[in-house]
Image 1 (spheres, rainbow, N blue to C red):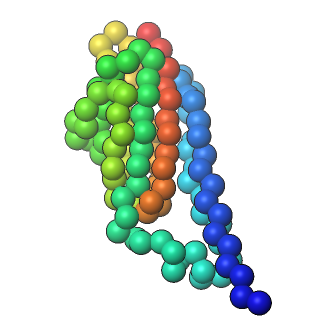
Image 2: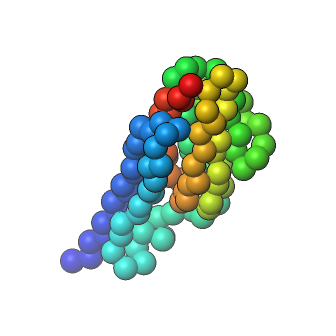
Length: 110
């Protein structure tokens, strides 16, 4: 009997600018089965929330809006930076896969 199993695991994290927690996006599959179900061109989603709110978001060095926000990005490496006057900047490098959904909540430190 032919069985295919595709399990998607997302890592969710809450970090502060003082912490250096890494994010992970993982996909688990059996053989090449999972690659048949994925569209390499499908964008990844990065949802950002912060304390305080209305923090400037820079994705790969380009202004992308203010928190809270949801960004659509290509699969691959990305650098997300949050900044607000009176607070220490926060940045994190992410590796996202096509179709993944990453949720990030950041508490900026004064």
